[in-house]
Image (cartoon, rainbow, N blue to C red; front, side, top):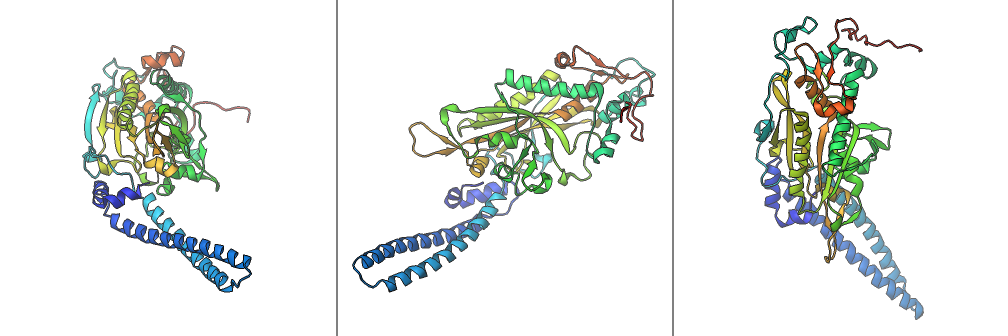
Length: 460
């Protein structure tokens, strides 16, 4: 949501900032609508004052036993006019808010111009991208053919080879873009989530929260998912929406609240399921678990004063990077250009992990400073010491990290030439000391191309 007073004060700056996102000028249209709305509001207030005055005169006339019919007729006429103006104001306010609600946040001054990911700027990178840590090992007759040629297997091919990734079964149960893991891969995914939550709560100072995965429309609107992105969401009945990220409930903790300045910053983290329809991703990343409808993610959210949010974004990004450093996964950090930023962000860093089978980096975390954009929509305010009135808080969010994508990166970067997966050191305590997810000695027992799972179900 945007500050209408700021638009009136400097419409050219507003249009210039939106222009960095590729949006045509809209300030003049907004100001014209707002001017008409304010003129009608002034007329309504004048009518109210007149009605109040006439009501007093009617009371005095009746007290003095004087005729008041003309005054009462004037009040009735005013009431009709006021009802008409109120309907017009309701329509005007709704139309103005609809326009403001669908406009994205204004990018910070240091956000580079650009239209898409090709214009993003690399800030730093960590680790050396390779074809995998352990692909130089000895030959093994049980390894898939790709390994004999020193090419890393894609995560889903290796998962099928191990008999622990059942994408065909998931598709039969739910449709495309769903996954199912079993055995050590399922346990490795759980280990990753536990590791991330422990790191953020014990070393990074975040408070763990277990929020609802269903929220109402007001909550979705407050954080910017509605109305613009309704097609990207899953709805549950008439009352609820499945969360696309824990950012939604975590940020909304301060909705309609006034927080004392001294209490900030708030730092929250949660490991939740997330649900996205991927309506805008038709035909993209349909193979494997890179882009699915249901996934789990460890989210970080910070609520700060306006003065704190710049430094908080750097801190949050560093917290996400630390996860990858401890996992010893190569990554790079990108500053997004204005055209590639999310709707509610004013500045965003994307962290991209190395995916050997694709010979490229892929996004695994996005950390954004939303400024007061969400706070204005949801009514999140702060009270400053010795200052009359309130200000809006600033909100930030970041993935710390997407658990499924991290699992993908571990599978591919830690695979061996023999088809094993070496478990990263920091995850071994969560895997009861296990060091390797071993490849099977024979193909028998793996999930077949027909979708037959490797386990046997009895008792049905």
